Image 1 (spheres, helix red, strand yellow):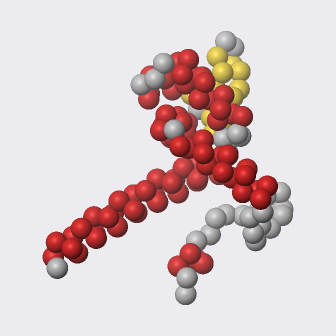
Image 2: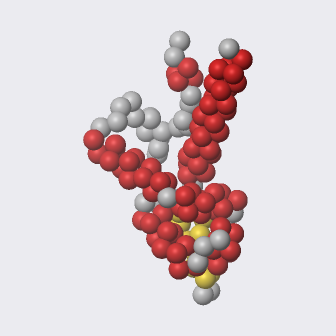
Length: 129
């Protein structure tokens, strides 16, 4: 049986069942959101926000970037619905849009770690042969 058949990706949205296929419009929306993860700095920002909400200055210090660069990245992440911001006085506190963003990030990390482990196993098998 196909191993992928056992991977559950949560639930539908708003009481609607999960889509059974990916049409062109959905594919474009997914690609836009996945493409934003192509920048390591945005992945780091999402990773830090997964730990809890933060202001721009806190994010900048945590990931070693200038606050203006973090603000630019946050605008892109907000535009694509991956993060939200809430004004508190003179600051905007940012957080992940919802648990799905955290799950997406976790799955990306797990996948990369899995590939890394598989690569090491392949090297070990070749060395022992």
